[in-house]
Amino acid sequence: MGYAEKNLVPGESIVYRARYHWIIYRLGILLLLLAILLGVSSLYAARTSPGSGVVRTVGLLALAFLALAAGALASRWFSAEANREKTDLIVIRTQGRDALSTWAGSRASPRGCCRSRAVS
Image (cartoon, rainbow, N blue to C red; front, side, top):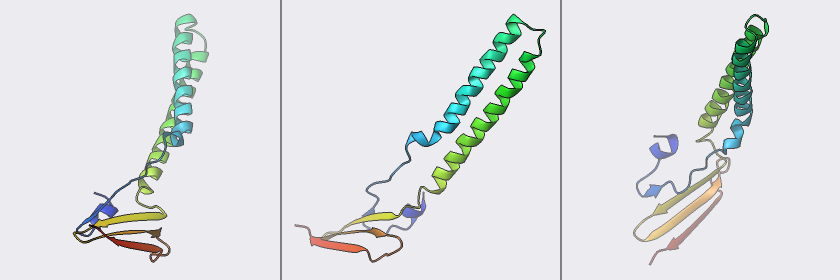
């Protein structure tokens, strides 16, 4: 349960929750694909010319790119999780028996705009 869910008053609900697009992981995915390509190249070199020094060098390079990919993916994931509850726009919808009140505004100015209307 996140911060928003913990601080809802009775009758309030979260209507919409934004998510990051998968494109933020493009650098990590690219590095991972490069690591896979280098790993396959290392295995191919081991089969075709086992005595050459290329196998170890390319294999170590593949492991280095794999570590970079893991770091990039983890960094983006942790960043997205940390910023999940920190948005500039808050929309709270309160439904009661007699009124519907919607507040939308910036966290910097909590008295942004407020609308109330009767529900029939």
